[in-house]
Image 1: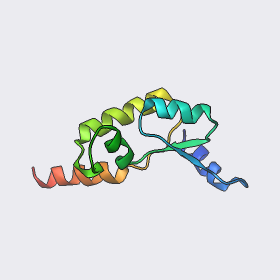
Image 2: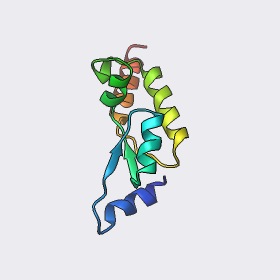
Image 3: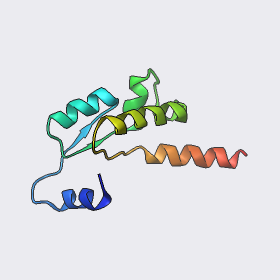
Amino acid sequence: MSYTKFTKLHQQSSLLILGNVWDAQSAKIAASAGFQALGTSSHAIANSLGYADGEQMPVNELLFVVERIVKSVKYLFLSILNLVIRTTHLKLLNM
């Protein structure tokens, strides 16, 4: 989904409701249910992988799941960037 299209969804007269997904299958189900956009959280993905807290999950596992979600549907809005940015920043600091 393009930034422009996502912005227009926020400007429509009806309420924008994001479907919350945690893996490729839940993304397919949410998409087929008619959600206009999808979101996820690091906690939702971490929980589905057996981690208690999203910030304890290895970034490579998070990115693998995100890639699978993105490839499974035609649109997606992700709300996990804070974890990716924070983890990348910490790795850079430790170099």
